[in-house]
Amino acid sequence: VWDPYKTVVSWSFPLGIKLGQEFIYDIEEAEPSRLHFTGGVGSFSLFYTLTNTIPYKLTAGTGWELDGTEKEFIPSAMGCTFNNGSNPLKLYSWKNRFFLQAAVTTNLKIDLLKVTESSFDFKPSLTLKVHEFLDVVFSSTSRNEVVARYFQQWVDLPEELPGERNVLVDLGKSFNFFNTRDRTQSGFKLKALSFGLVHYLHDWTMTYDTSIEPELKYKDGKYRYEFVPTIKLMVIWKPVSDIKTTVRSEEGVFSLNTMDEDDDDD
Image (cartoon, helix red, strand yellow):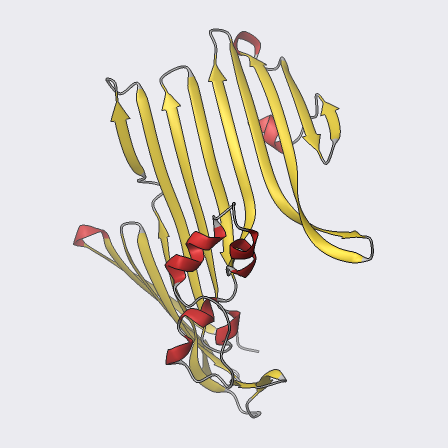
């Protein structure tokens, strides 16, 4: 039995441009299995993939169905990513004692076999630092699983997908905390919202973290999402770092001196 033949090639060019290719060939079946292209420059990267698979077709009222029984070597996915975490936007003030940092991670994946299953992840973060005194970090994670409605006019769908077709307007609606209807109709669904604070003292360091995530609850015969907060407060004595106290509150339950993987890394 022959293992699939696989080749991986990469190229690096000036100005930080990188290209790559991965090819897999099934020797037993005597046919290609996968061809994957990648490219990137700086914080931006993209990919394009072809796969040997059975294509799908979308039928109104039924959903996605196999279109035949024979495999075809066809495009299966494409997408792009932007991540400036290694080189975020930085602003300094007051002799570099105030420091503001902004980072964004986005990931767009378009499923070319089932376009309605495409997705987009949006993760912004903002950090404010006061030299040797205070760090404040705010971040959120949103996911959009209905991105096909933004480009549906360019693909052949049996039915029109409802909802806002302007991706920027739809993203703005997801952050409209004063309008429940906008947040409900937006394709961007909040997966996590976090706030962190680190206060530096002479011999002590205090860390406060709060995260909010939606959880599906069943109450009064109905399912609904509720935002459940998790609060964590930790104080470390610098001369003896092993001496530390952690207080955690999750769903109304408090715990003291809990040791977990996160604590061990601090």
